Length: 482
Image (cartoon, rainbow, N blue to C red; front, top):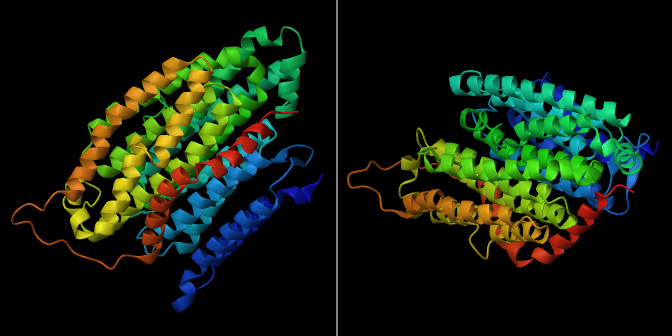
């Protein structure tokens, strides 16, 4: 059983339950912040255990849970996203009066993300995806007095349910073809049983799984829910969805394709490559048309999913390594940008609209610098982390004889410069004559911490890319099932 190997899951599960218990405990005065403190302590403890467990692969519960360099490195990404979401919600109206529930749901979603990337079995993978999804359905609608939040939760629930049905159907067909739900067993059967790779049901299973995971990753044409849900949800929740959920979805892609069904790459490389192209094109075109920064970042998230899918489509260790590195960079620049949006939302009404950012860089130079670094990195400007990540992803596509993916990605990145620079220029433009002085609030330390840490990471991950790439290379090798 080797149950002790799953210690990270135990800690996150226990902390999640503890925070929910605090929801029914009267908390007054200085104790009102206890749920967030407990939640952050649990996240820190989980990340620390993941560091301590770094090493050779371990399996728990007869192989249903895999503790290896891939799952541990992805756990670090999830912990960063969860901690940032809790910090961004510190004092946020979304958490007012529901602080234990808000923090508990963030931790529950993070537990589902961890379970997803640690899965060694289709059933565990499905449970992980559902745990993170159900938690996020509630988080999207947690501002029950705001129509946009409720609408966001309902839309995500409906589209998520469709994705769930398709996923379980795809898993059922994959089980029917291989006779096992174990990822290692699937890889073994595909590699040893004659004629299995030519089975039509295998192609159907792969197609359904790609569609279902495409829903979770916001890939085109399964992205319809993303702009509305991201805009309507409380911004700390949007930040968690665009980072943690994206990481879990990409982790599932890598486990199933670079790992379990690698032998059937001929059936899915072209499909996922086409999905990446459509996602990059539609995401960037959609972002060009937005005058709301939060909605623009939602469309940007769609486009970024396309870049990430390049690492899946090439089906090589270099592609997986590049994808994992880019996930770290993407999380840093996305959290930094959403932190500035949250800060502006708290200062002015409709603070997520582009016009509300006019002259904001001049009024708060540090916020302007953070947002500028984050957006330029998202656009792929050298020498920031976003450029390094895209360079590695495009290079892996060229090495795998899929140069067309790199060409589309480069053109899409060039198009993205337009809408990213539009926000940057607006932030540093002078205020219009006669404009009223906006309400200036003291900058919340928690929001400033996330913003500055994200900006520092955007620069640091580029300067010191090699140490992280070494970790990513080890994580990519762990995907190969012995």
